[in-house]
Image (cartoon, rainbow over all chains, first blue to last red; front, side, top):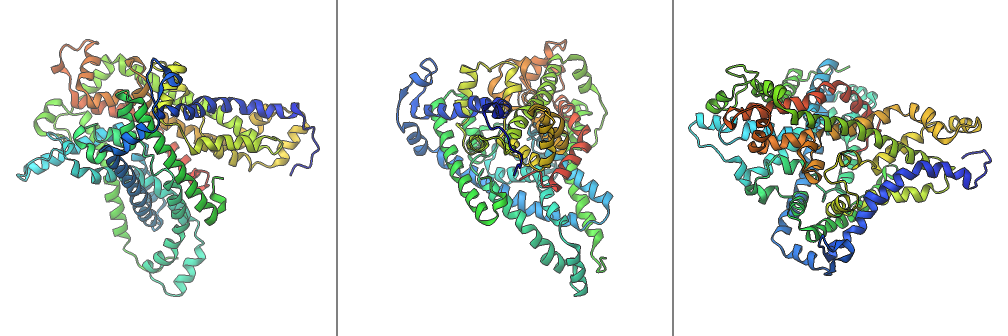
Length: 306
Length: 291
């Protein structure tokens, strides 16, 4: 690469080290230290004994977790919601939006539509949770007010778990599908227009062109999205699940995920047990990321992380 | 070019319906904030207020020192923290982007490991509160989450696209590495720098979790956490506003106040929206934003 001959002594390397040092120290303190701190998952951590002084208990915390009634619930919710977020929000709905957007010729209209689809993405989940209450509030919420006008009884939305898988996936799609569609839209913009001209000459109809030119153009990006998201399938963000159901305990069966479970563990100072849950999540996450990266490296080496 | 007729009207109709679905909930929230409390109690939420009222906003302006504090904390953390993260991530990314740096492979692996595995919430919490003493201090809003492996990688990819000859000639002219980074690399990486800053700003503005985990002193609440308490805890509103001249709980319009604070807390993001949209549409089109 560099054709220049350089002294490669310590002095030559020093500036690079100095520039890298702040981040290296930061990662040591805030990323590596907690990794070693995770040994409390194998201990009975007591604040007064500290991380090192607390008593070792082996795999006891893990055994408690896997024999608890909580484990199947939070693992199922976490994985299923993440799969729904990937395949419904980021792929199915986002692809439909992108394909529709691609058919809009007017630049102004496209801009207006895109803007309104992006706004929810940049709102905080706390605001979203308040906005959702406009519809779901049991007494003054619009859904129940409308139901009552038709002589139906109001639904106690925040204490009926059965509606929430739908509500959660809907809210996530409403908030993020517009943003996710930008990725797919950008791969549509890269299509060579001569393909459409050739199809026109062959007399292909609009739908045929979409099906045979536009949809295939989305496939590579969809693969990237799937593979990249699979790695984080165990680590659902906490924001949606903690704010939108308003921490209603009645909704725990269908809205509790690993992140909210860990948060409650922290609040109740259940440190060692919760660390075990977190460590399990971390290890499964690691395996998933390594697997998906392995797949990426085979399919498309350029996009591999390492 | 497009000769075959397509039901264009239908396409636009679908889009307009979608836009309504995306926008109207926020619009109703704004309308509720201008309603009177008694209308909401009698008739429920409605799209157009029966009686127009500025009561909630008056209360916010007159009485809430605590809300202003939350604003201050959020403005501080949403600007300072992304700025610091540019420095921390940018410097290390520059080092590992230079082939002359002998240890760049090892340092890259050191970064990648942190992207693959984490100790989890609890060990971080124990360290941050009991060893580093960050609990209940302003520092927790500024320091947590500064260095991120994915941002370093984004920087590195962008830096490595800068022509090597530029850097080498500056080297020969006797510029030191910090000067090269500041005067050549950063000006040539403006899109990625502003993308990372904006992402950090929005993330910081919308964040509440830091306060939820680490802060018990109300004076150090982030805006969104303040709002979260307002939404889920009417007692919180009563306390926050009663200190500042309001007599009893009955005088406080809980519902309209809730939505007025929602509006007030989202306003800065909405005002910046045209810029935000430009950055993200461009960033994604340029492929600089990886899914």
